[in-house]
Length: 521
Image (cartoon, rainbow, N blue to C red):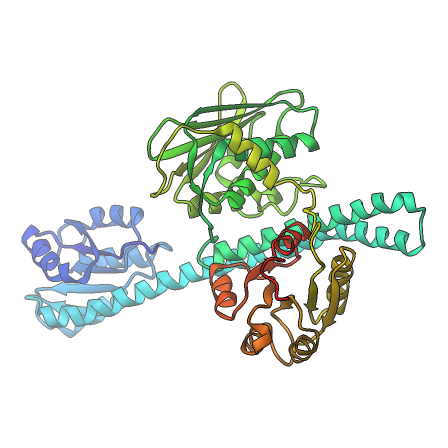
């Protein structure tokens, strides 16, 4: 936000100060008044001003002397000066004023129109100067973040990419069948790591450029989400004790996936920076009717000088980074998600030596409080976040599925995966081919990439829908975009489902397992 524009008025007579103040009132500037040159210099040391109106005839220090002192100081050298005088129009006085650094002269009594035409120009120039300085600051910060982002992302992508490349080379050399599952798990872990990095990058872009992180609110119980998040972290660090407490009703209308992301970041941060052998404490409090609070604390102190920066993007770059720290976007994204919910998040260090992150979340307008069923919610949430695959089409007839993607490796690998479940598969690699293959194959399901050559996914979907055989085909959009506008656009184009790349096999299998009743015969 730009600072208020300030104007300095110097005159030894109070009535003159009041008169000038009244004339300048319509210009939305802060007026600094001084009755002498020394008082004016004191104000100039404390304030940045856009313009100075100086009376020429003052005791002790006249306006010319004050102007010379202003021109002699680096801080005040560039301030425009307009002299105000009741003296006669004497050329030598005017020349002396210009030699002292004045840009103009006004004679008393001051004409309001003349005054306005002169001062408005300097006020506008000063506002433009402030705006340019603010733009330069923002661009410099953006450039710094971009450079840091490229360096960190390039570094952090190399580790999982190296794992994937090494593992695929092992598979290519036909290893012992017993080791295939172990190699595949390493490939999956590396891919998941890369997926998490990409998601953080997308969240950074959404937060800074796309109007904020989108939410899909639903009524949920925070206790269940905490339980499932703790279970996930416990599997990574079984030696760490998590102390969880819940007080009151911790239900509200929130985005469960985004809050799971918040908890994962906070708990992961506590695991990474907490002292070994000390428990991590999680406390959810819902005793207030309008909001719920959540605290996550771990033993250990964040340095005082680092506290103001923990939620900054790439804050980890301010200190030596560990091998698995990630991009340094975790806490920044936590703040953005909490802000998108209308809440607040902060951090402080207790005297006992524990670092505490505390966030508050408004419950949401449509939630009606009732006795919380935390245990049931916990069981439900844990099941929904499990990584176990959902069986596809178990006990049901196979599906006819068309996979469309201009990346042949992506299309072929997804087709092979679905074919293993007994489905009948076809592939296409552009939009025109997709429509032609679909007309011949008459699929039950089309998995359709949106960014296709010749005919994009939206156009291909509309052509399929326009055919009599295409009315009941289940269309699933495959895309790298997941904003509300993207989902609205795919829905308007005739898609039934919207999946974000890289495609989550669990989500895809769940969609397919629910399809037989809808699929055409």
